[in-house]
Amino acid sequence: MQRFNLTKCCLSAYFFTNRIQYMDNIRVRFAPSPTGALHIGGVRTALYNYLLARKTGGTFILRIEDTDQVRYVPGAEDYIIETLRWCGLIPDEGPGFGGNYGPYRQSDRKAIYQEYAQQLLESGHAYYAFDTPEELEAARSAQDNFKYDATTRELMRNSLSMPQTEVQALLDAGVPYVIRLKVPAGEEVLIHDLIRDEVRFQTNELDDKVILKADGMPTYHLANIVDDRLMKITHVIRGEEWLSSTAHHVLLYRAFGWEAEMPRFAHLPLILKPSGKGKLSKRDGVQLGIPVFPLAWQGDTAEESFTGFREAGFLPHAMINFLAMLGWNPGNDQEIFSISELCDAFTLEKIGKAGARFDIDKARWFNQQYIMAMDDTSLAAHVRPYIEAEGHKPDNHFLEAFCGLMKERVTLLPDFWENGYYFFEAVKIFDTATLSKRWKPESREMMLALYAELNELDVFSAADLHTAIDRFLEKRGLKHGDLLPLLRIALAGTMKGPAVFEMMALLGCEESLRRLQTACDTFDSLIAGQ
RNA sequence: GGCCCGUUCGUCUAGGGGUUAGGACGCAGGAUUUUCAUUCCUGUAACACGGGUUCGAUUCCCGUACGGGCUGCCA
Image (cartoon, rainbow, N blue to C red; front, side):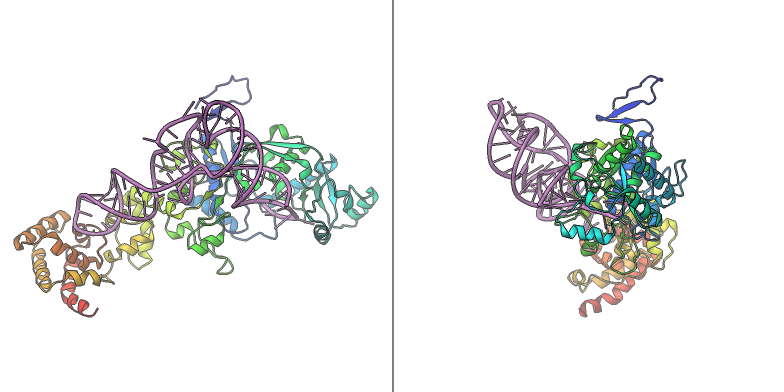
């Protein structure tokens, strides 16, 4: 990274990171709409905003875009904030986070937008429109590809097509109206996108977007321009679905006379379905049985309720790491990144242009890596709830040792219980298929002899067990293979699991011997019965 | 339909005018291990197509195809 220190007389210094120029005091915002659970793609957008802010010493702002009264869903805002907290993407400013540019909820800023809409009205960049939804519908069905624009607005009912007296009369009578942006004809809008370079639009292709709705609320277009301006946003990092409407946004900046200080745009590629085509949707989650939301969401119906990465047993940092790599790369082979490493390595320039397929297997791999790398104490804290949910309250020492034995054998948090429940309670299922091959007529006697031998042990550690059992086998001219598989099944019921000696040591002398006894008592009939 | 964006192994991607096109996930095989897992090794597999430009193109340009986004008083 080259750094250019400009003289103090300059208002702002600039520095370059891999060719993209950043200014000082970077301010970015994550601006979700509280219409339901936050999509995983939204989490990635939040992440990239957060990373740019952290990398540059800038400010990460949360702004709630709740201008749609109809689609507003109670609880969605809490969900968004809980998600950010779970992921560790804590806003510097936002509702409940403080900041000097609030309020950060757009519904609390209604009056501000009206003021700015008025300004556009006065400067001739916007106009009143009285067309009812029905009339618009009629116009659309009467004409294919109907667009409310320079070629059609004279035919519609608005302050451009009607005499001023009539407009005033309608206004005075309290007839509902919207305010539309008057898109100029024959101009070009050039956008310098940080990810896509130059993108051009012809204003003749653009329609006169509604900027203030009949209920007095702004649409996204107006609100986001005004707020980004007032909140001094320097970089707009958002999904590609916004690229098309960016032309309108530039036109709004132009109309307000703010174009020169407009924020920089970076439009992120979308996250696509795991299989097939199209962008990832909540339906994919239920269809494939995979989480596509960070946290579970309880909707009004079963169809509107979804599981989340957290509930599936993902560690937040593993999910973040996975998401970071979906559309961005560090330019080298490193894949595992802590959040702070991500902050250092992140650059907008390394974000790809093409959409990225959502690959749950890769996510699982990341989770496995994070579990294996985590120390036993921290891991125990994550695993404890799963064990307690099954009615067990192990002490920390035991649980940590358990985590240590299991962590190389799991990919998701629930696997700890599912693959290792027998550390907490009696074996429920015995692998009778293996047992019937291994349990010989003389096995019972061998196990009984081992029981007696182990019963004499003073110290029940893995190392001591190892020595004792090796000695036992040697005495009888047996090999590991003659005993250990049986011992494993006696203790755990399954052929899968940690080293037998470690398992025994953790189970303890008393419990281990009890299981040996149980094996001797039941294995004969178990095999006979199957 | 119109406008906009995109296209390297099945997936995530590196790379970039001359390379054995690299890594990771997955999958397959092997080594280690009493089992499973971990770890290690090996293998599998890609520059969408057609024209240019060029001594040479996967890389640059133009088309085509395919995919995606937008096209609401939704965000």
